[in-house]
Image 1: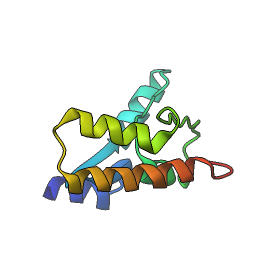
Image 2 (image 1 turned 180 degrees about the vertical axis):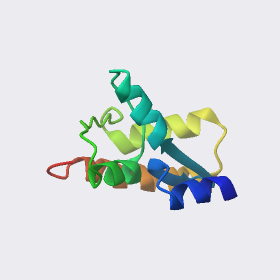
Image 3 (image 1 turned 45 degrees about the vertical axis):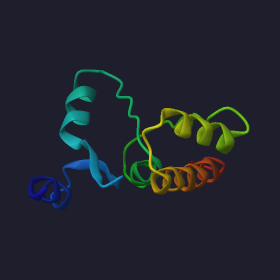
Image 4 (image 1 turned 180 degrees about the horizontal axis):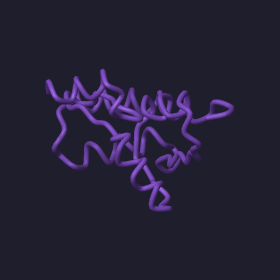
Length: 109
């Protein structure tokens, strides 16, 4: 954890977030290395990461993949069908999904 926090302070990530008690981040060095090799980098990140990249000097394209309609009902059915999530976790994930679906409708994101 200390290494991760140090990397954040030193600007080692193009984006980083905490979700479900875990920390996630995308290495700035890795992005630069791949771009230097002429490769296109595809990131699978959540809303806070998108906001960070959007505010950065990186040139990026964004794609939001939404669950089938009705989105929240479909997502809830999938989460409950897994049988691996506690009720608190399901509610937290559904609230986050609702926020992300609304954010995806924001002009310019």
